[in-house]
Length: 206
Image (cartoon, rainbow, N blue to C red; front, side):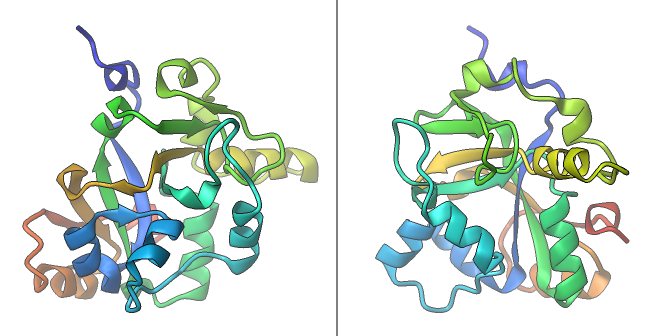
């Protein structure tokens, strides 16, 4: 029987943007939701998220389910507005992208959004139904700029289409790590996480 994830033929991996100093904790506990991080009281975790965006997410629920902060989030494309913001405001050698097996889409309690989950008009669906409304051409577009501010705002949100996994993404689904520079690559390799580490300058707008 075909798996739901097999239908997502344009997806190779799903992606989590993170601080590479969180990797040791992540490869011990998995990628945790905000609420799970609080429960485990992991004090060393470095939060790179935008505080204004997180406030909106904290106040929003997945329809008929838990709050957004009860879900660990992944992006369908990591070369997106969040990554651009991080590259522009942080030391690029502190950033990494965790590539997650798309088989995560076959688990229970997984939700897919057609744009940034905090966006006003975001649609939420189970993976088996989500492929019908995902606009992959816009999600994987190289740029999201547009002369019309309303259209640009829409394209920006769509670039951040998400996969939400309740509570945590298990370590077994973490396939490899992407970084921007050789310095970051060496740093991650010294952690001995037993996954490949590769430089991908494009995903970091280099």
